[in-house]
Image (tube, rainbow, N blue to C red; front, side):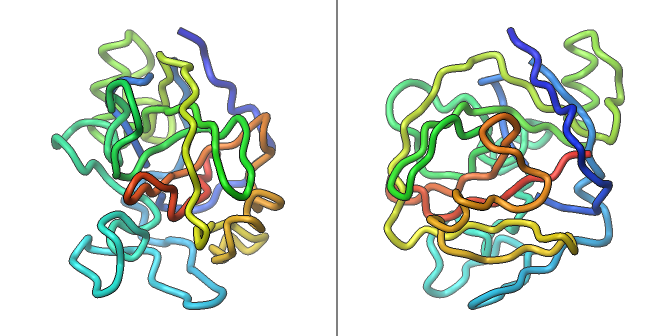
Length: 210
């Protein structure tokens, strides 16, 4: 087990963006996903960053338009956010995954999956690990499995990065990897939500932590 360091210069921003269940070391600090304010989305085809997950015509099963920029647990209630972090061996299933890119290009990503727990799930997980509970800032990130997964990136993939006003900017993925925005110092400190459809990365969202 290794501990992830989040000693990075960042500001407190009310941001809502999450993942996991068992690719999990630990870390904590971030505003609660239930915070009332959320960064807005700007750029071409701007959309509401908060979604009910209801079907959206023309949108893939896993997208910001459906799950929002902070996807709460899509599996068992009380588990890690997003699609979890125990997808098993083989190709990464379609879903919304949280992780840290080790290497990325315009066509592929090598990602270390992480687990993102928030709210009651973070409290329970921290307690189970014998750590401070509730954890600071109501969240816990763990990483018990440092295995890298190679993911192909769709040609029309989109990135959502935070600007200096804590607003999301929607940009082509190729632009996102060059400049992932504020609060990221890739590859040393880089954490994102990864939306996978038909085996390809279709969207990536920057995750802020204080």
